[in-house]
Length: 218
Ligand code: SAH
Image (cartoon, rainbow, N blue to C red; front, top):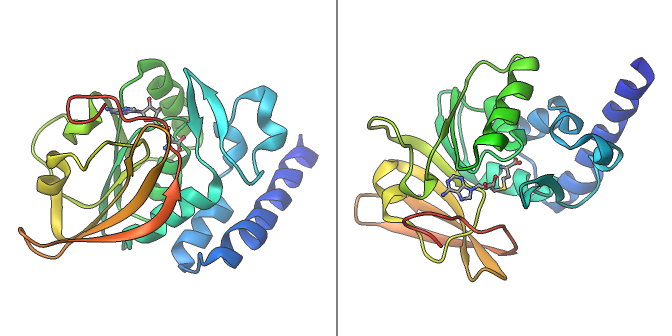
């Protein structure tokens, strides 16, 4: 058991060194988070040995945990501070929420599939992450309960266009990171809200995500 834990820790260090740093992940808070969060806990039992490989993995219900580098690139693009409050759309395994919880003050995460949300909650509880709130709902409409605005919004499923709800739920100066395109392939955008009318779109490259399914999506 100790040996296995040690082995994963080594793989985690190697992932940061080989997959993240050479591709431009240099935000110290992001690097620290990736060194701390045990990705193997969020991966199904039969795939644990592949937890730190350079790609996505299935997590059940036709969904995937994203490639570590893509999670890192998206999280870095949010430019969060320790006081930041972030909204994640698509909790999935809970891995990205765990990474975000090490960087921001609080993470709000929405998932549409109950069984995935339940599993994620269980693991995050077991690991004692206390600054994550998960809700079931249609995340294409943003946070489903009460009125909230966020310093950052990260969407880990792809939309045909940017849902209007995110523009309103993002604070001025905040960043939205979202894959937009067809179901087959998308462009990852960082959208900076400079003012109410001025949204600046920065292209971060091509990606492939599972679809965002909801009222303002597919
Ligand atoms: N961030 C996740 C990856 C999630 S994959 C991780 O770290 O593992 C994308 C997730 O988005 C899936 O779990 C899918 O069920 C969810 N999803 C799709 N459409 C959604 C919607 N409208 N609202 C909330 N979640 C949605």
